[in-house]
Length: 65
Image (cartoon, rainbow, N blue to C red):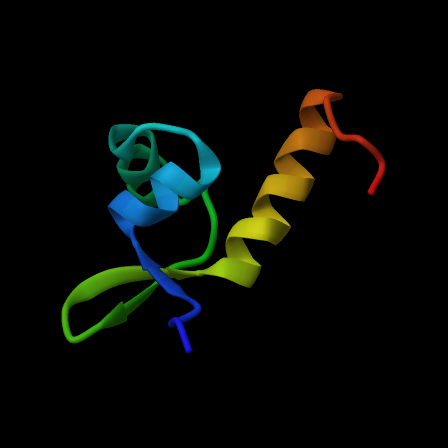
């Protein structure tokens, strides 16, 4: 069973943004929730989905689902 946690690189690909954007969001406290597992930053898929939904609605591009 695959892990629900993604690295920064995997999370960026999942959201279709750059790793740099993910890092900038994290440094500015303006992105999805993250955790550190053994010193590695990881993102839970549910948190990425929640953030994406809110972000898209705020931008007016949500599809209402």
